[in-house]
Length: 114
Length: 115
Image 1 (cartoon, each protein chain N blue to C red):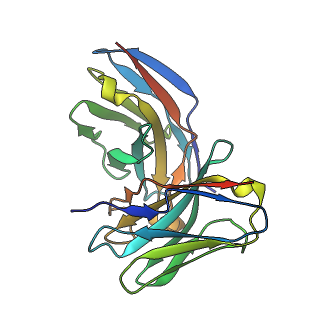
Image 2 (spheres, rainbow over the protein chains, first blue to last red):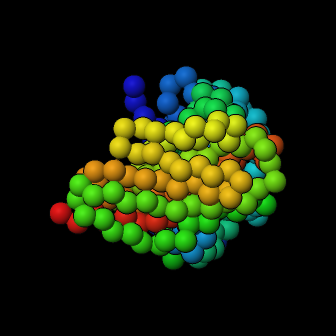
């Protein structure tokens, strides 16, 4: 069974630009969560989608948004990029939304903002 | 908000020896889950072990076991017979259905295994 895939793996943008990251969950998984990982702030929850609906959102500004498609694939978008948005963005998928369901993480997208 | 604290930024262990990674958490919830995740240099996070708060018995997975002290809000990970492949960043994490099911992660402990 294929794991969680994220594209692209690496991305370089400049301040003010916007970016879209993609996550394809494990087949059959309907929940997708996104996390930002930085050396300073560690791993922080961005949002969770289940069956195309946002179920939960972390404490991030409105520049960070996401969506989930009917095939459970998810995208996250960051508009008006800032230097502080440079991070590893991790996606995780699971069968359901509760903690009883194991989350499987993808390899991440490394975003660098210049 | 829930907080998870890992007080050991770095740890090292001799191959075949045992090492314990510490984690404490703060919550007022009674229903929650605790996890240890491993992130090797390849960056893919892998679940090592999980513990349901309502279970008194400590979870074990092969060479990995936890010491869950609910009253003390402590959740340490013991790695026995350490192997070179155990070298990674280890994250302690908390999750509760009463707080949106999102993960709260600690800052991680970097484990080095010395041959």
